[in-house]
Image 1 (cartoon, rainbow, N blue to C red):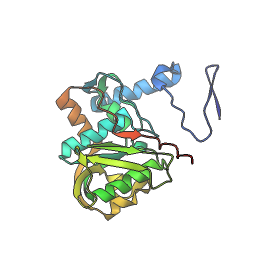
Image 2 (cartoon, rainbow, N blue to C red):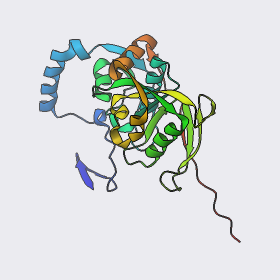
Image 3 (cartoon, helix red, strand yellow):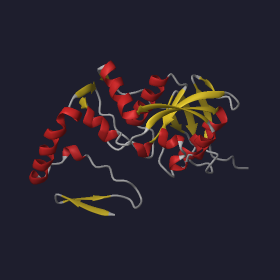
Length: 238
């Protein structure tokens, strides 16, 4: 796949998403003028600054990301759950470094998804992680847990070990997991959620994130290395 932009050729591998830093490109003046007109009309609703970020919270479809970790953290913290899980495909724009407006949050989280609390066994959480490690719908984004995985293993057997709340996960133990209503309904192939007992909070994730930013005022990069890729040692030769 070849794309041409302002005389520069950008080449991406077939089947992969191309990261475009749209805020670093010079906008078309005619389009920019039309956009500005509508920005002024909706400014009272989406223009207010709700917080500040010391770093750009970027998303990544095929790996854990700063934005994915941040959103999962907010859902977990706001609900008091043991863990937070969200899908990479639900994150549609980065949150910028510096002031963050309501519009920025709505760009990142444009869907009308709400926070849902699911009662999940350790075994069910493992199933969700294994689904994420297939990358069929992008990498799952998490909070409150740490998982090591090996992509050289067969699909469905890539999870190496799992820690929840600082302790090894117990397959039979029930954990409270905060997720979005899209996943709770089995979206992005995550059918495991349909087997869980669920409590709908009725709170839009975008609003929960705005409220969190307003309370914290400034946020930084969340702690990473929640999803840790490892490689199996080579087989011993006789």
